[in-house]
Image (cartoon, rainbow, N blue to C red; front, side, top):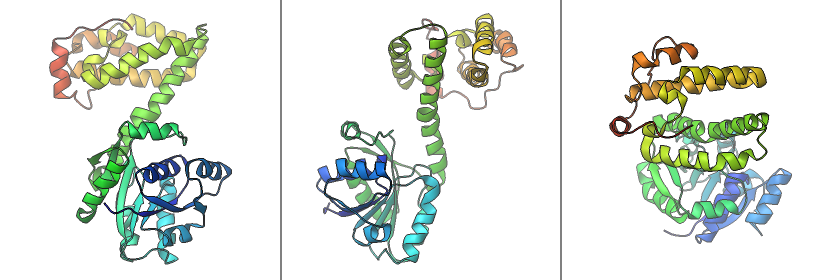
Length: 314
């Protein structure tokens, strides 16, 4: 692929890092937008020597305009670039939003520019650490018109990643899955750290690290068969004690515990790990009188689960 002149609108955690990675791959970042003190500092560290210019000038100078801005700002930015005639025929306008697809870029096609949705499925710190993570291989959720698929694949390859083609209508579901897994995981881990501190544990990070590492690895490999703990065993008494302890120390943790315990019960019941009749005392404790398997367990998980035990505690 020919090397591109790239303009980055949004030198935030994602934009600055992707720009630096593309430079390493041989492309050229010709200009970027950096307004906040943090963005200017990030650009200085990751994109040294790159001019910081207004958005319309950045767009006018580039073959590929990379829009790395918050989801709710994207539509307004796109319209503004079109209205100010900053774009030209043949340019590629790509955004890094997971939630949006090509529809939000529709205005750029009226001036002959070509749209591309290019979302890295990774949490960014906005530092050089991210470059190493990209180099180790990250999936990109890509939505592209047929004429840009080859170029999108080449860009992702330059970034050391793998393409996952996401249909336009599935972008919100794709992004919901990522947010549910990564963002809520961070919240869940911090909840667990706080409750361990409440229990008097001096080094909660040390306690959780091997447990959570094993749980994540097992879940990615085994699916629902990796679920262990009192809910998977139908231990209603233990769960009731959990709820009592949380209510007395951190009542704000009770609703999320209940929500996750109920969903865990749904999944182990659907996977055949826990019989519905055996789950009734547990479901009573959770405030659910009948199993609610809204989404059945994947078939592969069900097959694996039949021959597996409940594993060790927790």
